[in-house]
Length: 148
Image (tube, rainbow, N blue to C red; front, side, top):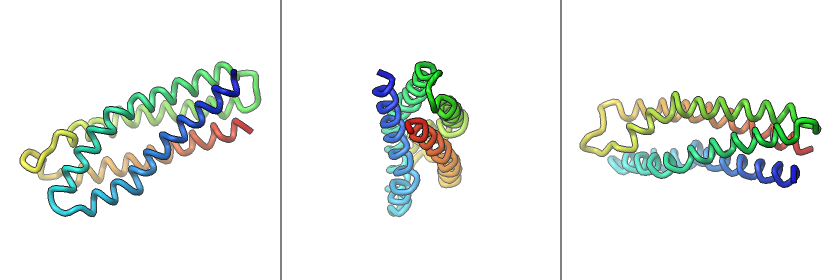
């Protein structure tokens, strides 16, 4: 049963990393290349879509990692899983404190109501997002290492 939990957790976290990596290095670049208002509207739509899904994925990944850490406490790699869970806690805190406030504003913006500094706010969100991606990549790497 522990093996199934380990594999399932690693897959769930790995898929989350893939989505967030794609947002950072593919989707945002595509959206930023769109002309005029399409760029801002695309970012707002993405914020609504992923803003509804990702909280469950982040919390779910954290819970699965914590369960793995407890269930596998006396097995090899438990320390790596604990550190990975700690990094996932950091990613959740980063999300709640840094990214979600910007996303909550962005997802309601339209060309008619967006603030003058909307581009600056999206750049700040992207900077925080790059840091968060680094954190979850590190967590994923530790989970994979714990499987060995």
